[in-house]
Amino acid sequence: MTSATPLFGRVCLLGVGLIGGSLAINLREKSLAREIVGVARRQETREQIKKLGLADTVTGDAAEAVRGSDLIIFSTPVGSYAALGEAISGAFKKGAIVTDVGSVKNAVIRDLGPFVPEGVHFVPGHPIAGTEHSGPAAAFGELFEDRYCILTPPPGTDDAAVKKVQALWEACGSTVQIMDAAHHDKVLGITSHLPHLIAYTIVATAQDLEEATRQEVIRYSASGFRDFTRIAASDPIMWRDIFLNNREAVLEILQRFTEDLTALQRAIRWGEGDVLETLFTRTREIRRGVVELGQAGTFDTRERKTPEESED
Amino acid sequence: MTSATPLFGRVCLLGVGLIGGSLAINLREKSLAREIVGVARRQETREQIKKLGLADTVTGDAAEAVRGSDLIIFSTPVGSYAALGEAISGAFKKGAIVTDVGSVKNAVIRDLGPFVPEGVHFVPGHPIAGTEHSGPAAAFGELFEDRYCILTPPPGTDDAAVKKVQALWEACGSTVQIMDAAHHDKVLGITSHLPHLIAYTIVATAQDLEEATRQEVIRYSASGFRDFTRIAASDPIMWRDIFLNNREAVLEILQRFTEDLTALQRAIRWGEGDVLETLFTRTREIRRGVVELGQAGTFDTRERKTPEESED
Image (cartoon, rainbow over all chains, first blue to last red; front, side, top):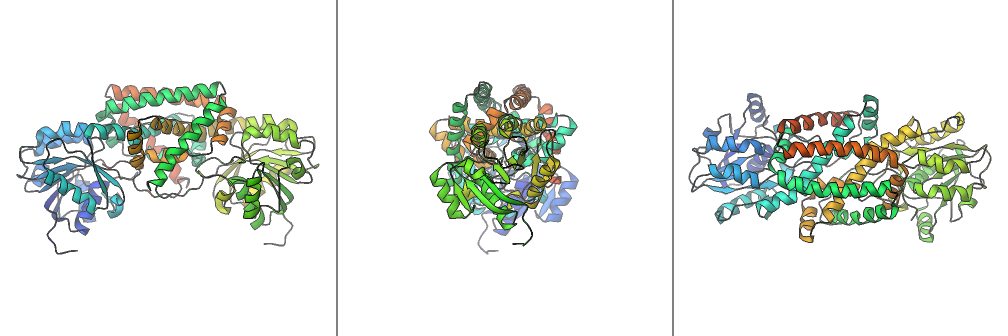
């Protein structure tokens, strides 16, 4: 605890789960807020937030919580923003800053922007961090360390407000990048939305197999399938909303992916070994880039692939 | 080191990379072999094997190495089996056991079977273990601990020979499962071959983007894409051979996958949120199965998904 004036006075967390809760821990431990108000729709969740001590006060009344808050952070599924924004539009304090942690940004500006009144600052954000777990109990303070956080302030957004939101994420240990919302949605459509769509699909395909085979698929999942099951265990509501709200970008990249998959399918059908080898060789480059950038994470590197190795 | 009689006398490793080398370490540390002969095609690799002390003798002459060996282990890419089998077919010692670690089993029996003479026992195998790294330097003794190893002995295979190969893998810490080769190829086509095919494709799709976007894809890979890059960094030759040698099973499951992906694509296009939510919810079951079976591995569970969580 430092005695310096905190970055924010009253901070309102709309949604206190993995991300909202982890932000709360940072706000407290780093003395970034004078007061934290948590909002959760369900009584059960509110009890949990209290028990975990993630907020000074917890309520189900979003407007009440927003009233008098200097920073309002949306961390609920993006599909809920419009209704939530409408419910609190009259409660904003003049000069307050509204931000969010949603995985899509164009739709967030479209849905929330109209409810942010003149004199209130809107700085949409997206921390590239998370785990396959969700809910308040999954929150932890180090979640944002050494991660990127993308901010997509609409043109004309007050620069001081952007700087304050940036300072919040930097205090959490993240590197902040500012970009256009449409560009964010395109890039994340590739790095996050398409991979999740593919993972959900392949796990669903396996699930439709007869019971006996399905059990074996689970038993031998270490041979590659396992990573997909982890991604496909992500929050269903959150992901439903992401795909519904980044439709164009996802469908466009999915089209490219399907074309590439069809070409590979053809190469296998026709036994074109050279085509396969060439493609499998060049895909190693991107992995090198990921590792060099220090974004490879730390893993149990065992059983990452099936066993033989080339006698090179 | 125990003074008991080793399980095998002279063991010939055809290919001493990640798997062959890790087997060598186990053969030595657990005194499972009296003598280990390593075979590598390239001089550079042979020097490396000697330097790492993975074999008592190292040679480029496969037939020479097989002569007098009690156990011969193929751990080269499956595409090399036929030529290698033909080269050594005259060198087998009577009563010797031939096994392998290949990711496909029907093709291995098809290619290698004809070169295994009467009186020599053929026990095809596949340890479900590996990492994204390859080569002798990547070998380590614990690779097979708590992993599954599948054996697919053709009908009529000598039971004592199967038991000895099983004992080898159990000594390495693996659980052995016996199944039909065609069934193995179907199950692994789903758990391993399709996931790798998908991962290679999605990484290739990202790679074809303009340079600027590609750099951002790498930067923000932690949001899901990263796991695919690791899988897509697997050995190109090995994987070329797998797809060429498990064509039917891979194309069949790929067809199912494509149908499911098309249905999901349509649901996104038409904004069918309920369809998405239902599918994303049921895919969680398989993950639970993987975790319960203790095959989930140990990970840095951070940034496993993009951030918001449902306000449940």
